[in-house]
Image 1: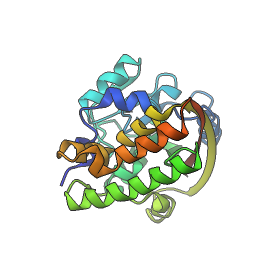
Image 2: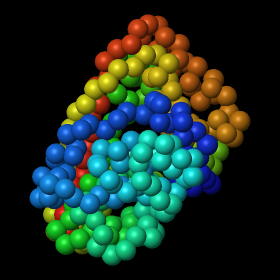
Image 3: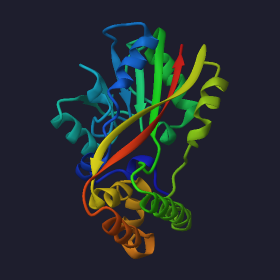
Image 4: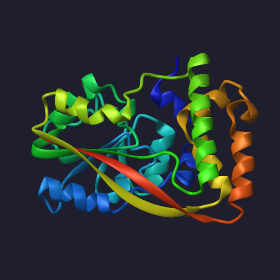
Length: 251
């Protein structure tokens, strides 16, 4: 069984190239909730710094060396560490964020670490985009079918690490007893992509990479089928519509 860090190692450049940039409105939303105009921010599971870069002088915490290299090249401050053990001092942040990452963290160890790092009145914000983006009905449907198929293959080939289901994030945060108020909102953003990026977005999923590393072919995973549909339906770049789920928790 692989762990969440291992499955995202070795393809940081491709990950950074195809993953969406979080909407800038996140900063306004989270800053308003924190009640500070210039908060100190820590970003957990920073990856290549896509979400860390939303904030001036934010500090990213990322376990994978390849991801840290790309983040540093982007100009992001990033240190080695995990969400469960950041290595940061007590009460050092006004805001802690986790973009596309909370589901890979161990809640029992991560939530107390977040509460320890946050100052009184601080805010934890975890956000994820829905997969796939809304682009084309046939492409979107086949993407979901291939995604369901590769998740079965993950279990069969023992490459699925522990996973905290995203729909239960709010309930877990509330049940932890560490936050005085928890809520969830949705934001939307859009960008542009072609057929190749649509397929590569699925390839950037950790489970797909783990299966490819195990020697499974694109045919076996379903990528070949998705590529054929995408090339037929998206002969030119199209607008991509993303929905972001934002979980906010105040200490």
